[in-house]
Image 1 (tube, rainbow, N blue to C red):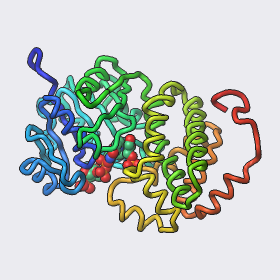
Image 2 (cartoon, rainbow, N blue to C red; image 1 turned 180 degrees about the vertical axis):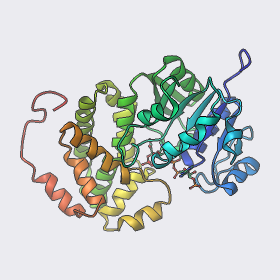
Image 3 (spheres, rainbow, N blue to C red; image 1 turned 90 degrees about the horizontal axis):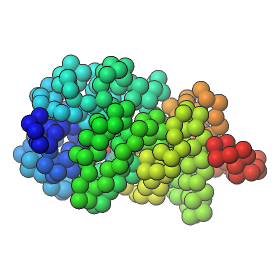
Image 4 (tube, helix red, strand yellow; image 1 turned 45 degrees about the vertical axis):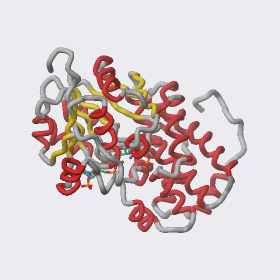
Length: 342
Ligand SMILES: NC(=O)C1=CN([C@@H]2O[C@H](COP(=O)(O)OP(=O)(O)OC[C@H]3O[C@@H](n4cnc5c(N)ncnc54)[C@H](OP(=O)(O)O)[C@@H]3O)[C@@H](O)[C@H]2O)C=CC1
Ligand SMILES: O=C(CO)COP(=O)(O)O
C-alpha cells in the first residue's frame, strides 16, 4: 500500500450485507472489490451499479468493482471482509487462504456458528488461516438495506489484534456510520448469533398477537440468556450490554426488516417453516443457529428456556402455542437467583 493511501478491501459475499458493506467502504474512498458467485448479480453490480436481487432500487457507488473471480478479488487487498452465510464460512476461508496477500488480515460480518460442530467462527478462522493472521468480527445492529441507503448506523469491530480491528473500523467509519472497537471476539460472536434465535421468539409472540408486554418480557429474559451463556464461555458482560448484544437484540426483535423476526411472525401466524423460509428468500441464520446455541448451552450446563423453545418450534417438536405454554408454566423464582449471570 502507498503511504497515505486508503487500504484496498476485498469483500467476499455479494448478498444484501456484503453488498451494503462493500458500498459503504467504497463510498469512503477505499478501492473496493466485491466477490460473489452469481454471474448475473455481479454483472449488474459492475455495469448497472445495482444489486437487483438483494438490494433492488438502491444505487451503488460506481467506484465499487465486482467480480466472480475470487483470486482476482484478493489481488492487492490490504484486508479481506467475509460476508457469506455461516454455512459457507469455512468453505469460503479455505478458498481464500491460498490467495490471501501475506499482510492481509481477515474480518467477517457473518453471524452464527459453524453448523454441525458449533464452533465459533474465530475458531474456524484460526484453524483454516493459522494462528498469526489478524482477525476481526464486525457485528451490531445493522440492517443491510438501511446501511445501503446511507441511514445512520453504529456497530462494533472486535479483533485479536488492536491495530487490525482499528483499520477495519476506520474503513467502515464515516459521516453516517459509527464503528466502535473491542477485543472480545467470543462475546461479540455469541451476541450476533443468539439474537437471531431470540428474534424468532419475539416474532412468534407477535405473530400470535400476545401483546407488547410479552415482547418486552422476551427481550429482557432473552438478554438474560445471552448473559448467562456468555459468562459461562468466558465472554465479557459489557460486550453483551453493548451494540453486539443488547443493541442487535432490540433491533432484530422489533424491526420487521429482520428475516429471523419475520420467520417467527410467520410461525406464530401458523405458517410452515418451509413456506416462511421460501417466502423470505434470503438467509435465515436462526434455523441452524438455534441448534448450535443449545449445543453450547448443554456443553456448559446452562439452561436457556426461550432458546430451547425456539429450537423445538423450529424442529416442529412443539407448536408455538405449546412453546408458550411451556415458558409460562415454568416455576416462579427470583429474577436474579445469585447474580446477573444466573
Ligand atoms: N442482511 C443484513 O442486514 C445483515 C446480515 N448479517 C449476516 O451476514 C451474513 C450474510 O447474510 P446476508 O448477506 O444478509 O444474506 P443474503 O441472503 O442476503 O445473501 C447471501 C449471499 O451469500 C451467498 N452465498 C450463499 N452460499 C454461498 C457459498 N457457499 N459460497 C459463496 N457465497 C454464498 C449468496 O449467493 P447466491 O445469491 O449465489 O445464493 C448471497 O450472495 C449472515 O451471516 C447474516 O446473519 C449481519 C448483519 C446484517
Ligand atoms: O443481523 C441483522 C441486523 O443486525 C440482520 O438480521 P436478520 O438476519 O434477522 O435479517
